Amino acid sequence: MRQTKTLIVGMVAAVALPFAAFADGDKSSYDKAAAGERYEITGADTSDRSLTDAEIRDIIAQAGAPDANTDVRYMGGSQTAIETTLCCENLDEQIETRTEIEETTTYVDVVSRRDIIQPVKRTLIQPIERRILQGSVEDVTEDMRYEENRLPVIIERDEVPTLVENYIPQVTVENTEEITETYYDVITERDVIQPIERTTVVPVQRRIVRPVTETITNETRYETVRAPLDRRAQPIPETIETLTEDVTTVTEEQITETIVPYVRTRNVYQPLTRTTIQPIERQILRGTTETITEDTRYEEERLPLIVETDVAPDLLETIIPQVTERTVLEVEDVYIDQVTRNIIQPVVVTTIQPVENVLVNERTETITNDTRYEEEILSGIVEDVSVPDTVVNYIPQVTEDYVEERSETYFEAVTQRDIYQPVVRTIIQPIEYRRVNAVKETVTNATRYETVRASLVVLNVGAPCNCN
Image 1 (tube, rainbow, N blue to C red):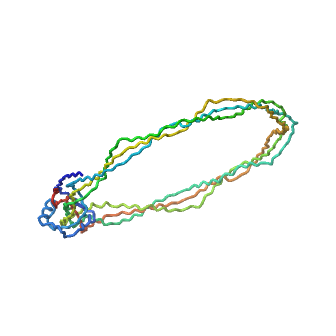
Image 2 (image 1 turned 135 degrees about the vertical axis):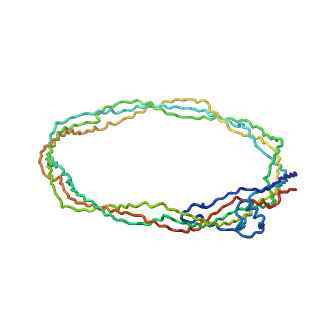
Image 3 (image 1 turned 90 degrees about the vertical axis):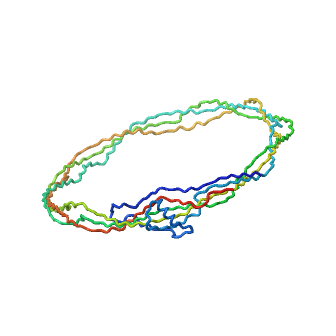
């Protein structure tokens, strides 16, 4: 068993941070409302590790905060360490020895049986006489026939267009003005009293060192040692041969064609001339225009009010600040762990004995010889056909003639109307003149809260790392 010890020494140093501050507002601006929010004090006023007066004065001096109205608040803190320092590390190895047998099997291919296939291709020839019909078409034309068809009279009447009314206004305009004068108050001077409560917050962090011991078991480390190979073989058998014939029969046809003629279709054409007469009467529009004058219409239009306002002078403000100051120390505890680590390292050493078993893998081999061809002619076959009846088609040949008989008539309708509308319009324009009335006021503003936060001040509590 091996043991290893490592010594690591950690140190904690005090950190001095520069002063940084911010405020919720400034002293010279005024936005008619209280600036920021009042700082609410949190935490406890007592602690088991209370600060002394000397420590409080030193913290205020480092932060540059005012020393009047000082309030110390203890914010507590989490027990979880924010930093971990490794001091000592002890290593303990635990060794375990094992033996494993690694057995493998190897196969040797040996042909123990051989099948020989003899392909035979046999061809049968079948002579066939096939008789084929060859049809023809015959055309026959009959004498010409004549017909006449007279259609009903069609009247084509012009569409009467939509009546167009032209509205023609005759406007007379009269303009008048209505003038009024008003006064409005304007604040030209304001005295503002601004109460200010300024709070300086100094964050203080106490870094407390505490010793911690932990034991860690690492993952097992495996080591392997291989022994010499042990080989074991099997005897090889003799080969057995077998012969098999594979016969394939193919039948081929030798076809001879004979033509048999016959009349398949007879087309009978029937010519016809048909004349269609269409009488058409067209009715044509003659448009007229009429003029109408309506009664006089009186209208009154009132325009939007025009307001002419005198320019108000600029507002003069005087701000008087009243400042109250206080200082708050926010003390927070944080922990730093100094760790002493004991490491257990398990080690497993394995010895592997390889064993190889050589086995015979018997297989069957198939061999195909060259194909042997054979041929045989069969007795002849005659395929006869039956002649179908002749198909007669009657095909009419019609010639269509279209003739129009046209005539014209006239009719009257009113298509346009002009309407004259006399209008008398009166336009009234109201005007208002607004004058300035200067006013002076005094205002007491709401309290303005300002918070100034200093940079963090660090205090170190505890002894440095010590390993034996």
